[in-house]
Image (cartoon, rainbow, N blue to C red; front, side):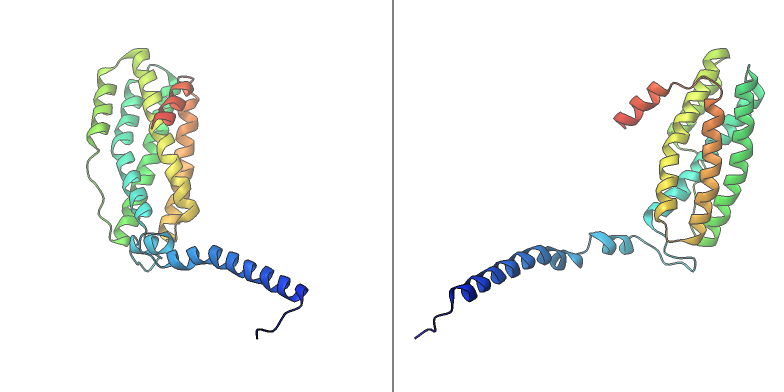
Length: 209
């Protein structure tokens, strides 16, 4: 005959059993998914390349490529503004672009060489199109186009710089992100100082990106 447990003992056992079942249900997904490829740390490691300066992630590599591409079209755009801008404010913005991207382009090529990463040597088709638009524009239309094209481009890369600076495990990439943050923020400010940036348009573009 099954021994009869006191009521309070039986109730306690039931409560403990229920708690154990609940805990198992909560913990099981962690155990079952932790080692699956394509999730969490497994995916991060699978997409990273080992270097002496720390792992180089896919986002790190994208960041280096974006910095290089930015210099390939924003440096010529700055040179053009120095030569063509009717106003001193836009000319000053051009000077900052030339100085900043000359420095940043040298830095990204140095870092890429040390990491064994190949970088592009030409701007993208879209970037070449923006340069053509600037070349074809004149006067106030040119200045507005310059300020808004360049401010929009810098805003897009600025968010990537922040992400990389916050998450990279590579020492060289982290140092480059510091340099990029300083340079890009300076360019955003000097472009905004022209008084020509359409912030409503920037917000709409970001919302539909």
